[in-house]
Every structure is written in structure tokens, then in C-alpha cells.
Amino acid sequence: MKDNSKISSAVIKRLPRYRRYLSDLQKKNVDRISSNELSNLIGYTASQIRQDLNNFGGFGQQGYGYNIQSLYNEIGSILGLDQDYKMVIVGTGNLGQAIANYTHYYKSGFMVSAMFDVNPKLIGLRINDIEVLDYERLESFLKDNTVDIGIICTNKDSAQEVVDKLCAGGVKGVWNFAPTDLILPEGIALENVHLSDSLHSLAYYINRNKNNEKE
Amino acid sequence: MKDNSKISSAVIKRLPRYRRYLSDLQKKNVDRISSNELSNLIGYTASQIRQDLNNFGGFGQQGYGYNIQSLYNEIGSILGLDQDYKMVIVGTGNLGQAIANYTHYYKSGFMVSAMFDVNPKLIGLRINDIEVLDYERLESFLKDNTVDIGIICTNKDSAQEVVDKLCAGGVKGVWNFAPTDLILPEGIALENVHLSDSLHSLAYYINRNKNNEKE
DNA sequence: TAGATTGTTAATCGATTAACAATC
DNA sequence: TAGATTGTTAATCGATTAACAATC
Image (cartoon, each protein chain N blue to C red):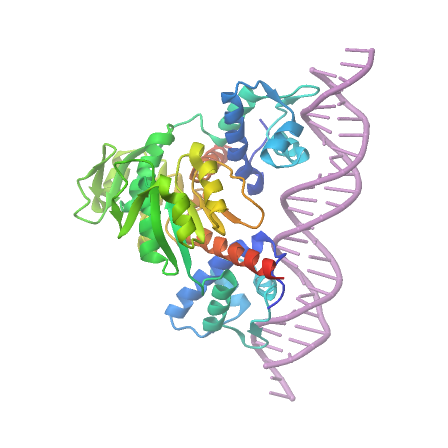
């Protein structure tokens, strides 16, 4: 495999989507696909597909195309989905619980080890058999357990404090659902899901379409 | 205001973030800010900030900078946040409930009129005083009520069917949480929140960092 | 007025697309 | 082998950054 360290995030963001389409094709028992056929399905140009994949190595074969099974596996391995991840969720409101449920049922390689909250009404509850622990215990939990990913489902005011503790405790990545921008040490991965920002851009496009119709 | 119809989505995606920072500044009772100061806070270059804002008109003043209050309002109005939106949620599992809760408490201009599900155990429940209706009733509900935004919290197999009904029923935008790509008619806005894709890119960056450390 | 800072044009950078030689 | 299709280089396009004249 080539050196992946300077591949643009535009490429990386497309990989999970490639993988989804390849998974669908696999389920339909399709063996192989050309960049052109894949382009028709997925909507990226054939040229872009070939460029994207060649960032990581030559997965295709001239005159044949790409083997779906093996390309699916390759992309999984590029993304690191052949590994397991231990996660903790901080903030056990509706969103935290929904994420716990979602990963529990749909994301086999991503296991929630514990959930944390400050609310005494929630502490002690079990969600999908995961106990909700007192937030006070986060630091000691991180000392005693290897945790790869911290998931922030708190409000925006607590988020930075939580992320500091998580990073000090050795997590390698942070999945942030709080509507704020976090500062984290070099070398720790961050992925934001800014629901509010997403809803607001939706509002923009709704209005743009309305205005265009008027013209 | 200038013609907004061909502004790139890269610019639009930054607007909610500008607005968040402006809101924070407002709370700190700051009156004005230069593109340079804002650059230090938000992390975009001053040049980009000025370019972005000038897509929509000259909101600043030479020698002074930007008035925070008025820029905040301008961006809100560009995004359409000075209007109200009626929404329905289809799929009332954990995620659907979390979204209902989230918008209820944090998004004043976005009101959930009804929720829909096929599960008899959920139909009839009230979540934040919003009744969960039988999915069978979606079409007639859309006939009788104006709905601006449809929120898809179903599994991926039902998502396209649901979105077809929503679009036929006159929604102007779709907020999609199902892990699939939807096809919708021209002129209807779509915003995807692909949690799975997001988690998978996080996995990629975790591993990239690990590999870099080894070198 | 002098200084500061925008609005805007021009330059650069990076990402996407096109083209085609290599090769299965 | 002939046809198909990749891998890869070159061309284009678009987005970001730099520079500076306009102006508050």
C-alpha cells in the first residue's frame, strides 16, 4: 500500500460511500464492475473513481475492471474496519442513547464499553446492557480500560472539558455531536456531526429553491 | 442582496459556523470584529472570510470591520432562519426520538408537527407532546397540513419509499439520517447526515495517526 | 486627515476531468 | 489476438489566498 498520510480529506470522505455501494453489489451477487458502471451507480465520474482508488494501490485490472469482493475488503482495510474499536459515550440524553443503540445494532466493530453522565437519574441505568456510570468516574475508567474513541453527546458548554479528559485518558479519536468546535492535541482524530449546522444549510437550500421558482 | 443561486456549497457550509461564532461574540457583548480577528477565532483566513461574506453583499465597513449584531442577523436571514419550518419525522426509533427532542429544545424555528411509525407499540405515544401517528396516515396528513421538511429516521430499505411520499406530499426539503443515498425530484433540498460514513472516516484518521507514529 | 480595514481583482493552489498509453 | 478498461499524465476547472486600491 502507498503512503496514505497526505491523501486529501475529499478522497477519504468518499471511501465509505464507495464501500456502501460495493456492499449492495455484493448482496446482488455481482462479481465485477468497471469504473464506468460504478460511475453510473454512484454519481462520481469514472475518472475520479480511478484516481481515488489509485491513491491506495492498483486494485483493478485492465480489460476487466474491479473485483467487487476484493475492492470492498480493500476499502474496509484502508478505513481500518478490519479492526475493533472500544468507545465510551459521554452524555446519556436522547442523542447519547440513540448513538449507543445505533452502534450496538449496526456497527459490529465499534463497541461501547461504558456511558457517562452527571445526572443522578441516569446513573446506574443500563442501555443495551451498557451501564451508565457517574461522570466522576471517567478518568479512573480510562486509566483501567483501553478506550479508542470518545463520543461527545453533552451540551456545548461541557464539551471541551470532556474532550480534554478523554484525550488525557488516551483516546485516539473523538466523535463530536456537541454544537461547538473542539481543540484537541496533535495526533488525535476528530470527526464532527454538527446537526445544527446541517439543518441550517438545509434551510438555505429550501429558500434558494423557493426564490428561483419565483424568477 | 446579490444573486445567491450559484454560490458554491463550500461557502454555504461555512455560514452556520460563522453564525455560531458571531452568536458567542454577541453573548460576550462584543460590538465589532475585523476579518483578521475573526480569522484568529474561527480558523478561516481573513481573505476567505471577506470573500465568503461578499458573495451576499458588503456587510462590512472599511476601517471598522463588521458589526457583530448585524452580521449575525444577515447570515441568519441568508440561511432563512428568520422563517419558521414545519417538519415531520418518519421513523420513531431512538434516533427519531432524539431528533424530535433536540429540535424541540434547541431549534425554535423548526417545529415538529407529527411523527410517524409502522410499529404499533409506538403509534399513539407522545414525544414532547407530539403524537406518533400510523405511517399509513402520512399521505393524508401531508394533504391536510403544510409540511416544509421531512426527516427520515427509518432504516435504509424504507427510506426511498418514504422520501417519495414526502416529496409527493409537498415537502421542500429532506433531512436524511438513513444510511443510503436518496433520489429526489429537482428543486427539493436534501441534507444527509450519514453517521456510518462519519464513523468510518474517523476510523481512517485514527489508523493514519497510528501509522505515522510508528515511522 | 491618517490609519485601518474592507471589497475586489489577480495569482496560486488543489481537486476534478480528460486523454491515452499500458496491459490484462 | 482484439477489445476492454485500467493506471497515470496532462489539461481544466474551481476554490483559496494574496495583494492592493477604495473608502470609511
